[in-house]
Image (cartoon, rainbow, N blue to C red; front, side):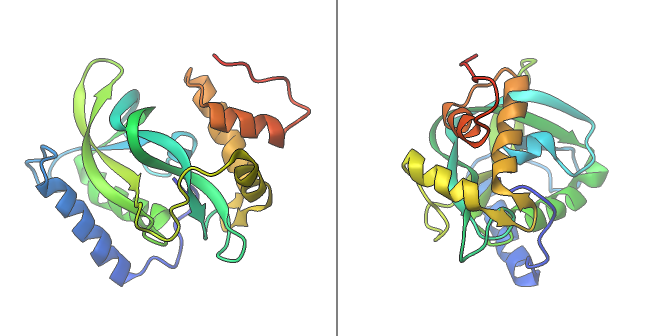
Amino acid sequence: MDGGQPASTAGAAFKQAAAAKLWDGERVGTGMTAPLGETELWVFGYGSLIWRPGFAFEESVPARLHGYHRSLCIFSHVHRGTPDRPGLVLGLDRGGICRGLAFRVAAARALETVDYLRAREQATAVYLERRLPVRLGDGRNVTALVYIADRKHLQYAGRLPREQQLELVRHGRGSSGENPDYVLLTDEHLRKMGIFDPVLAGLAQALAPGAAPRPKL
């Protein structure tokens, strides 16, 4: 996730397109039976949402999403970079399992929360909005709003060599701040949850060489 405050560039045309993607995701069998705003909303966070959700929620619970994995696969043109000097941020890419944090939002705040997330995450429409099944750490199964990488988007970076990842992150800076801070904060908070991401850990060590070694948990 690109992370940060909502970008002013997300206009009415984008909101219509984003809404279409979300409802399309519901139609393809995500198990939703009530319209948005009539029931509570779950949101799955796997990057900056973990340490800066930016919306009101009733509870947050460790969770697992099957079929996708966390990946530094998105060129950031707004929050952590620019089109001329892009940064690199997280997306959910196909395959594997992703451990993250699920937030439960009251029904009364569901619509405003989705509006907030679209403005924040979708400044350039690089993610696809979907409702997908998520397994909570306490055993509950819920359907959560999830942002996955759009592999057809020009900002989809795929799996880059480590040297290129480090170069992009070192020099990335956007409306929400420095790209190194994004990587360091995400790595730090994942570790607090007992989650070890080898790519983020390796970049964090390179970005903060004076820090103690970051062994695998």
